[in-house]
Length: 59
Image (cartoon, rainbow, N blue to C red):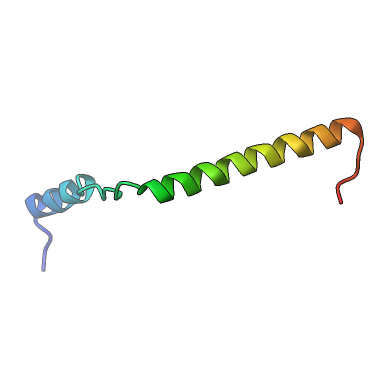
């Protein structure tokens, strides 16, 4: 069976313009957890940088 140019173009267009999957809005709890995690990671990075600058060895 041959591939017709119109149907091929239609398939390619459908592939290019797929509907975008939307993310569900985050709940207040999820936002708080994400914020807590980001803050903990930021503080850890700052602590490690400070210890490296002072020449301390991590535990």
